[in-house]
Picture 1 (tube, rainbow, N blue to C red):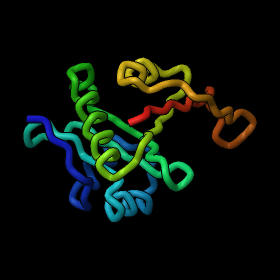
Picture 2: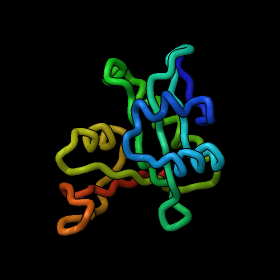
Picture 3: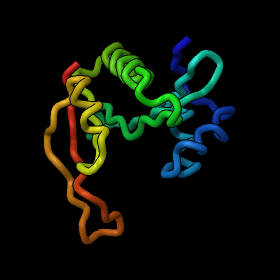
Length: 139
């Protein structure tokens, strides 16, 4: 049975098997502020999601990650719809996410009705990478 719940301290070891970018101090904030989730199939944790607030008032999904064996089975879609519904219930009118232009995630987001709204170029910085696509969805 699919479920999503807020991340807790007890999830820390599982969390960091999937999230290689978040600092431990930021993990503590995700727990405290309820801005992180663990995705389950029955009793088995299979993925994670986290978000921040862009411009202090737009939920911005910064990561959704499923264990590889659970990709392509509808869990990501269900998790996104759960998050979008929660953001709507909290009174937000729009959500955002991003992905690099060379990643396949853009197609996943477009199927969920996210629309391209620009990009960020980080060339010649310590965070060099391909263009980061910004995507939004009106709730």
